[in-house]
Length: 346
Image (cartoon, rainbow, N blue to C red; front, side, top):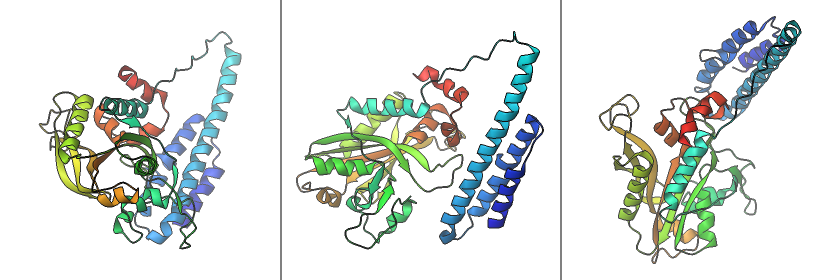
């Protein structure tokens, strides 16, 4: 596989097109849906876990260099054509730049935050580079806990067994903000935590190594599961329409007990079943649960006096369901034509 990567990299460096059509043909060959890079990604799935880090870096380097080289060639060939055309016809009007607009992720994130703000939630923020304690240990993930394998983590500083050395990593969820809030203040606590998170996953139409979350936390005396259910039902109706209904399925998260996955009735088919909801009439939107007493105690909150619930959702996932976007990668391509489709949502 390494030889194949190096061979493709050599092809990229040696490619010398004569016109823009050849550049586009080469782009499809290397970066297209059925191109060489996607074929490598399929092989990458079968690679042994201990080799994935090294090979993943090489594949990313190949993709970045191929994209950079193709853009350079497009730019140089495009500039040459513009120069010739300008000499041929100096009276030709220039192309007006397209105005930018708000990103659908920003639109949906702001809508989520605004809905919960009506219930008294305030926004809390925290660092994207975190330590192990705030991302895992304080959330009931012991060092040997198998749940740590649920998330492929980007470590900034190599893991160490030395007691005074903190492991630094890119946060895998915004739950770390909740931990910091519980450490800083005593209940009542009612916060939402929007932010960018990172997981070491292969990029595809349904997954990305960077995505956005909004998580929520409510801690006070006598908080119940019924309180959580009503809050989430209110959110679903405000975001997806008054006819929206929800259902909860038992699930598992280390930091909540009991835990549940929340589905909302499909707003595209009205719950009758369609390709988007795979004929079930339901769409998964978030995870939630009652905060585990161990998590409260780890942050200095008396679990015998206080209880609470937490929930979390992926903003990309909500935006895909709300707007019918089928490929997650579109959110990261910065194509203004794509962004302008959401002008009416502002």
